Length: 385
Image (cartoon, rainbow, N blue to C red; front, side):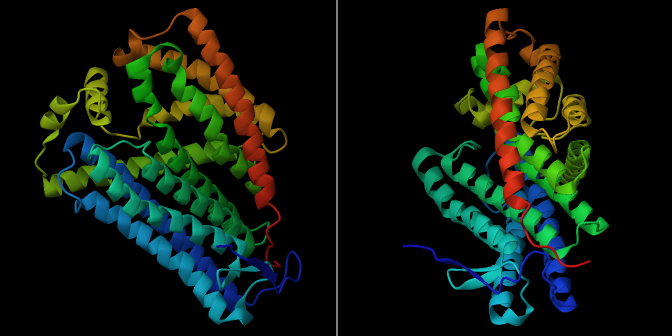
């Protein structure tokens, strides 16, 4: 089956749009942002729930929070396309038609991205039926869900550019917030690398630095380029940590109110190398909360970001990302080497050198991809100020 994408009613960049059309599309954008924050808090709580309590039921509070955010995202993304399809006179200039739905590029990207996330849910259920219920973030359905959420977030970048003029403060805030949400999703995707580092050691002791150098520039560089601020990556990290700390407090409040009964010891006994077991073992050795994905210590990430900002990710994305990769590698060598759970796993100098070369290559690739993504997002039409 082919999907026909047709440009219609294109009147050039900066096409004038009615005030009413801008108003509801701006409201939809901020609704999407709020829904994504809600879903991110649900996922954050869900990780802690499974790590501290175990997988006791599908209908747990974190799942309900997560799916409430996903449901709102679906309704807003496809609702905007439906409204534009039924009321074409209110459409903006840069409008396309796909599968019978008419809307801007941003809302199309947001809608079809979240559709992938929804598609991942039944596949995930089948996956667990076939291979067990243990929570493994890097399973194909989980990665499909994360990919869909990332595409939806990238759609929000476009929507912000479509509904606000370039000098608008609201557009700037929307882009920074979207960048923080994209970072949260990408950071979640690379978290299992710490388990690989603990279990495998050697070159893979530095697996986090390799993956982070490859994917995190997609949030940092893109936000810097679209916002026009070279310091935007620092704001992205600070915003993401702030949202994560709020989510952590909400999870703590939820645990206090619900007081679920933990079955985690039995889960750990079944497989000491499972993600849940390793997360508990590492957290206990480090004296941290099992499953916690956010801490103030994450702000140490401002050190490699400062190196990126110094090179200027807006104009030199590859060089900035490569510099970031080197600084991040050095930070993680020190950080992991100082943690009790990892201290005895620090590899030999030869393996560390190999890991550094791989991290440099990842930084080059990450900067190239981020630069291309920013270029692809920049042509979006904007309303006349």
